[in-house]
Length: 185
Image 1 (cartoon, rainbow, N blue to C red):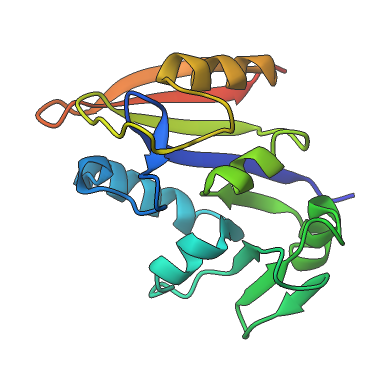
Image 2 (image 1 turned 90 degrees about the horizontal axis):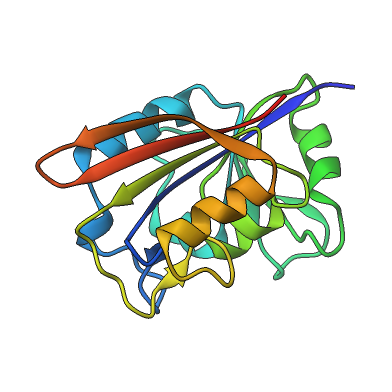
């Protein structure tokens, strides 16, 4: 069976939020260094998985293959030549990945909260967690359900069998730090 490498990508506030309460990404979570790294990882992926809000808010200008998780469809539905929608309540995510990327490859999971949560039982091989150390998004949408800080987000990843393999500063001026978690094999 083909191997899918599941790779999560998020930039969070100090509260562990990926967006405000309405689901919009505030300017405080936008950073050029993080964006460049994120885009390079998407370029290296066979498929990008995101939620409906992210899909609608971010046009697919680079024409990357997308899987949009949505409870508004039944099963796995082709939207166009590169975009598919999946209701994970009717078809397991693993089965959809096997159909869409039968040869295996890197799968970039880019959120929102429900999408990040949906991959916890499957397991991440790597999770790129950027932290905007000066950003505050009180009451925002967390990277994972039930977390309220970066420490809790990191603890969730450790609970899932990942360990920090690298920490670096992406942008000193804006206070953007990066922790790369990988499965301990």
